[in-house]
Amino acid sequence: MNPDSKVSEKKRPPTGSVEDSLFMRACRCESVARPPVWLMRQAGRYLPEYQAIRSKVTFLELCKNPTLSAEVMLATVDRLGVDAAIIFSDLLPILQPMGLDLEFAAGEGPVIHNPLRNRIDLDRFHELVDVDPLSFVFETVRATRSGLQKELPVIGFAGAPFTLAGYAIEGGTSRTWLHTKRFMLTDPDAWHELMGRLARTVGRYLQAQFDAGANAVQVFDSWVGCLSPSQYREYVLPHSRTVLESVIGRGPVIHFAAGNPALLPLAAEAGGTVMGIDWRIELDEAWRQVGFHRGVQGNLDPAVLHTTPDVVRRRTEEILKSVAGRPGHIMNLGHGILPETPVENVLEFIATVQKK
Image 1 (tube, rainbow, N blue to C red):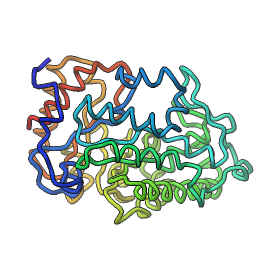
Image 2: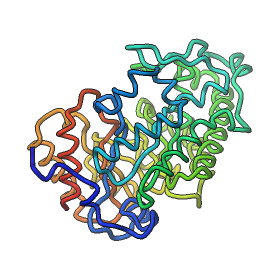
Image 3: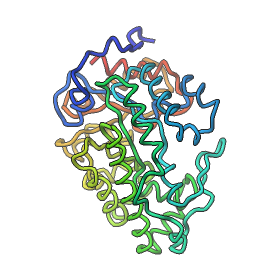
């Protein structure tokens, strides 16, 4: 491993406030000495610090324990030396107070035992006008903010309406998203009602995270890549726009629509201060498509971190070279970090960016 890979807090230059941080300045497309860097799922299963805490509680119990959730992320920031801390939580707990029976089954991931399959099922799926049932997330924001260096930003997050709808309809993850597409295409009125309830709820949820101390938020549309551009425009774009417009003026919003580069211009049309870019398109071309007036985040393939430090360093440098120092770039992966990723490769990735 490159000896410079051991990133420490002492190497990070002091700044005056969180608004002066590399991350916040990059979100505003201001000039920075180097791109800021953080990782999606940066406090994940690949870290011993996470595994030690996770061995004591179930995943859902961890998400609902603000003290432990903040501890996981603060330990991760100390270990990695990243330039921002995303709260430790999950996309799906928001669905529980809306009426769904959510479980994280060992070895299976999320399972919803009462999925929504038709318009009759919407009678038991409730829009949250009051997001107090999710107060544990807001407490996690506060605890993370209070335990972090004042100049490091805290990022809140939520699932986008389509991705949440997909989980709610499928009852978990899917390869084809068949139930979701069938619902969407056969009963458009019920679909838009479902998406509207989700969009308004997610908007309130993100506003509450800003109120709790988040400096920025990210909206994850992890599964929207299963759609065509025409489907996205008709069935998704208006509802994503509702979410993104609801937090205009509160702080930077990263819009991450993964899986299909053909959707990027439409996702940008829906909104977002910064567009998250996955690895299926070169970053400079993606930036051209979404417009150079906004920032971009990404986009190292998470699989690269399963290679060698030399490969990690070379591919990271290639991405940095492709954007040629243009203001507005936040370095990240093209999706969440994978389980069993070698920690030394993560440190190599971060060190390569921070040497720029």
